[in-house]
Image 1 (cartoon, one colour):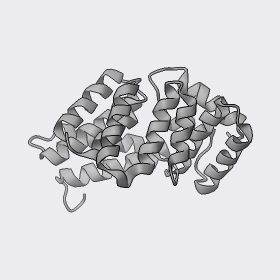
Image 2 (cartoon, rainbow, N blue to C red; image 1 turned 135 degrees about the vertical axis):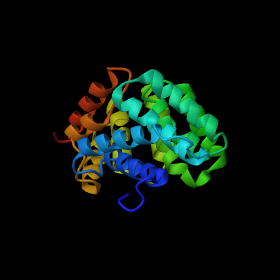
Image 3 (cartoon, rainbow, N blue to C red; image 1 turned 90 degrees about the vertical axis):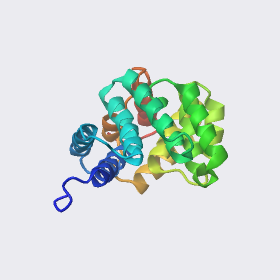
Image 4 (cartoon, helix red, strand yellow; image 1 turned 90 degrees about the horizontal axis):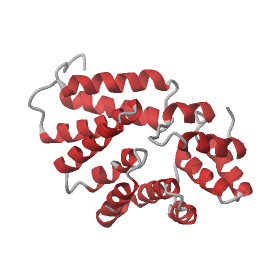
Length: 220
């Protein structure tokens, strides 16, 4: 950025990099990353004549920022705008489920995942994990567990999503195995990190998830 100060492309890449680092629990300090994301996105939002590619990535990012800020109406508007800019982009449409599900738009999130699954089978593990998450929030626990089991590999935070489902199904021993595995793969995940990175429109979801993970042995 010091050399190409006006590059919207670089700003977008840096913002998404910070987002993935914080949201996926790869960050040593989430707060500066989330702050950097918002700053870069606001700068891009004020930039005229963005290319369609940059505009698509920006509005997808703004949906995530609105989620962090609890602006659920804007989450849905930005997701809709992103989809309209990239109506055939299977990954982008699928990825919008990351904000649609926390906003409570479960049916739309599942429809987006199905759209991606039909067109982008290479991302099957991601699609299974996302579908499991949305199904759990709908209370469809057995279906959620089957989706997690269908993934060949789960990222550490996805293992913990699965663990919450298993707690609610009463499968405590298996839950504890998933919880032991997740921090072993990513030492940055604990209850405090989960609390700091996770946001839902329904105020009951986060405390319920934290209680499940605490029951399963995730440390504070």
